[in-house]
Length: 499
Image (cartoon, rainbow, N blue to C red):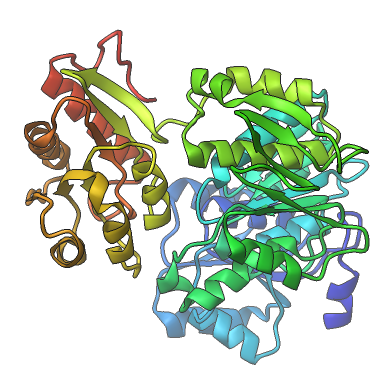
């Protein structure tokens, strides 16, 4: 069967009779199961818990489900099924019992991204892939690149970790010229085949260490984004680790390294000269000239002038320029582009205090970027820290923090970090355990601490699932509490709901 699997590198290959076990029945797991059933494979999904709607749909399309049970039950299901291949949904630890048993038995393990790469020729000529990862800024950069390429008249879709599974994108009957694929470290861990047109790792900071087991393993997973790149490897001039990852990658002959940063660009880089964002990579006379993309002033007018967002703009511009998007098109897109909700989103302004929702700052690296954008902050922080130490961030930004309001279940490490690195900063705790009370209490504490000119900043540096459904739920709760506190209510015309 191993020889046959090596031949399964096209939608039009013979997939009939393949016995595929899919681990997980979330959005990605269902897409994998649905795809494989359509190809004629025999599919068994193993899941701890399956959403009722997806379980019903799986039955309708002809897949089987083994739900629940302990590790021994799931391994038994693998053995009894006689799987030829196991498809892993993102998030499952590599040492999951089913994966360990499959590896021990010599059964190949594929991620959904490699499966999609094998099947990318379903609709005519395969789309080119642009792959994007990084600890922070992935979604903003993915959206920017997609908008720039679309404005250039190409058929393009954003997919992957941004929401739409790549398998759904490659099966879309309309077909695409380009897929802009956001990749998490979980997805990259399993990637072995993808050969993108261009790739980018925006930044690297410790994150998801509880999953990967070490910072080195996390960085190695992120670095896989550059493997087999054909045209441009885009890296962050301000983050030496990303340049190191490019140097270590096995790329195709002719692929270029293209840096981006907030300083004056070198030859083959993107950067800023006298407030002008410039391209010195994709033009003939790189040694003596540059192409103007936009200005920092124009980005400010579009709400895109925070330093970390400007970096995302430069990275996105480099990726778009690698496909031939003209500078004038990039400038037009940036004039109308808006950030996602819960990404440095202004919620309200009253009594010379601004209230900003950056609930999407789910790790210290993202929170650092937010804190660096404002000179005086009342910081709402906390949640699930995912094994990451927040101490260095507190030490680095202590001079900007007027006061801190600590939420979440992992409060002890946050309190210890402030006691050690910023003992002079007033610390307030939200002891409420009920979700609906967390943000109203946090807002009242923040309002009492804030002074004119301050920003009350929700940038939790942590995941949200201890007290909220997700970061969006957390952001909405913050915005609602702020508006109630300020007397605007949820339907205030000056400050509409975030989403």
